[in-house]
Amino acid sequence: MKKLIVGNWKMNPQSWDEARDLAGSVKRTMSRVKKTQVVLCPPFVYISPLSGKVGGGLFLGAQDANPLALGSYTGEVSYSQLYQFGVSFVIVGHSERRKMGETDELINKKIKSVISGGMKAIVCVGESTRDHNGEYFGFVKNQIILALKDISKKSIDQIILAYEPIWAIGASASMSPRDLHEMSIFIRKVLRDLYGVFADDVRILYGGSADRVNADSLVKDGNVSGLLIGRESLKSKDFVEIIKLVDAI
Image 1 (cartoon, rainbow, N blue to C red):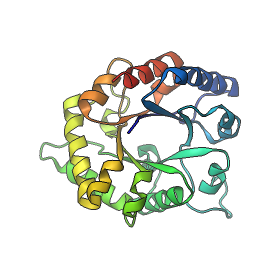
Image 2: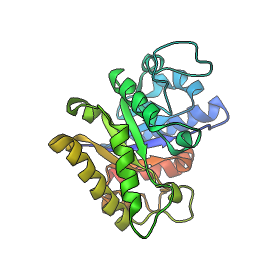
Image 3: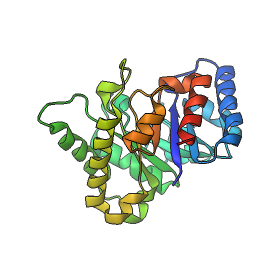
Image 4: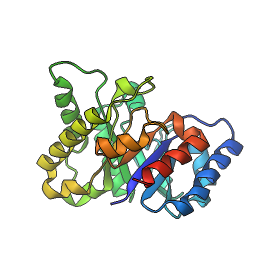
């Protein structure tokens, strides 16, 4: 199974020229990338013009999707509309969306719509703080169970799980590979309890702060299949370097 690097651009960059150049630098790199898939998740306004720049291991993703196909929902974009423009992956349940009020029930609906619409769902889970008693394990387990409610075994290969420890996002130091390895094993066990051997089809990503210094150790020693990257995905040289480092593992 190939590794996966996801660049979440959030509400960046400011201009189409910057977005085009950033995507172009990644596209040029992909000819030398053999073992890794890369997904770019730009703001909605850049999805259509970037749809012609994917291929060869480079995919187009979206940062969110409304679970309904159409309707009177001002400002929303549906999963079916995204699919028409070549979107293959959709981030669901990102901590910033949860902070804006997204519930586990809504996240579950979005996941179902995304996979029924022929796309893969990058499902974000993770604790905001850590406690000495390890209660955060139960918190993450509950998030996974609620997010994947009624998702069948035959559909689980359409799920990518992104572990996003909120306390480590934007921090000066990322989570240690050892702690990440522990959480990766735990998440895999939760998935195994839910789906048996089918859980082995689920790629687990790390969604905390990662950069060109720690990317390879986080993936290799952290026992994950790739990274969900925010800020660093907007720095073309650094993002390309991260892709190369992960691909070389």
